[in-house]
Image (cartoon, rainbow, N blue to C red; front, side):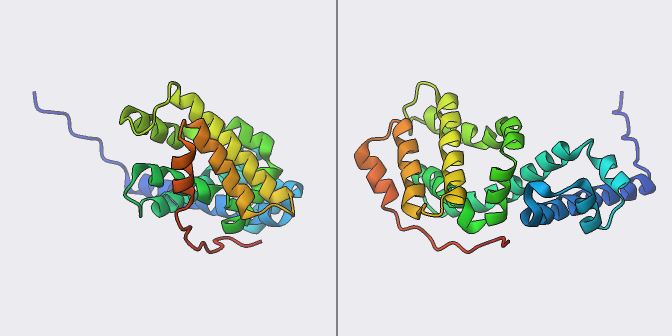
Length: 219
């Protein structure tokens, strides 16, 4: 029998779907901007006003403020991660490709201060979406372990521990006025030792000239 023809989508439904997606994207951008200014004091009303939407429209997209904040953080991370990975992709060595985005991440307060401040302000929300934030790092470390670039017995556990170390390194950069880039890199050095890399290998990886990074988002 010939395959069944796919059911056509009504043009008006396609337009409606595109409108809903644009509305949602605009809402997430507005939420990022409001959080950067008001932090934890931001309300749904503040966000709706900034997005030029009715509060009821916000609730059509998200059930509550926590759901909106979670989606905003995930959206920001989804934008940040390819940018950071593109910096690592300039290298050919697989370990250099792994380590450079780590060094970029611990500088989040330098490159994306709004994102870093939101991480601090809404840490309890981030704690609930950690599995989504860790997914690509876990996959990367598993792949390097499978390729025998890394020799780790429990790559998923190692990746989760790394993520925790780097997250608190970012928090320190935000909250500690005396924190330096050297402090940030020290977190990476600790992380590399958790991956079983020798001190000599770690020293070589950390000696790679670090690219100049521009501030992508401003307060």
